[in-house]
Structure formats: C-alpha cells, structure tokens
View 1 (cartoon, rainbow, N blue to C red):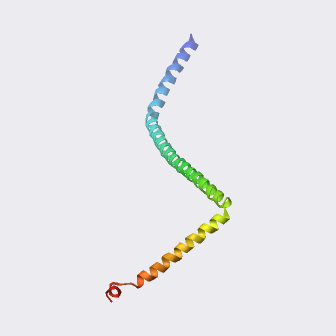
View 2: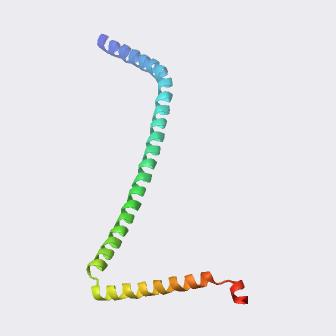
View 3: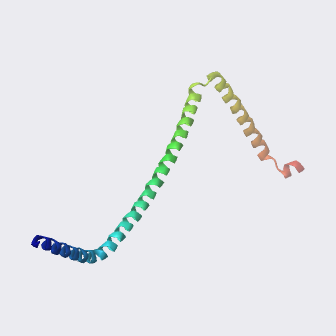
Length: 117
C-alpha cells in the first residue's frame, strides 16, 4: 500500500509539473506558430519565384525551338538552290534596279519651271 501512495503522489506531482511546463510554454507556442507562418510565407514566395522562372525558361525553350526550325528551313533553302535560276533572277532584279535609278535621275532633274520653258 505504501508503494501505491508513492506512485499516486508521483503521478500528482508529475501532473502538476506538466501543467506548470505547459503554462511556461504557452508563449513559446504562439512564437512557434508565428515562425511557422513566416516560414510558410517565405516558402510560398519562393515557390512563386521558381514558378515564374520555370515559365520563363519554358517560353525561351519554345522560342529557341521556333528559331531552330527557321534556321533549318533557311539552310535547306540555301543548300537546295538552283544556281542557274538564282543567277537569272538576280540579273533581272539588277536590271530593274538600274532602270529605276535612271528614271529617278531623270525625274529629279525635272521641275515646273522646266515644263513652262
């Protein structure tokens, strides 16, 4: 019976000490909750920044893919050119340019006073 009372006394003592520790830690709980809230806020902000960067990288990857397709198409066009046709077309364009330059020179020299004479 003596042991039972001691055990009960220890139980009551432990409960009293537990309540005292809980009262002492009540401010710590609020502080801990505040720290957790701040950590969650920072985590959320970091996730948003990482998401924005991933989005930017995805857009850049798409742009690079489009440029790659254009470069390959241009390269294919250069490699597959019919040189005789290209030279003929270049000659026609040069003749048209020379004709346009000659017309411009003649028109530039004209004025209303030259027309009246």
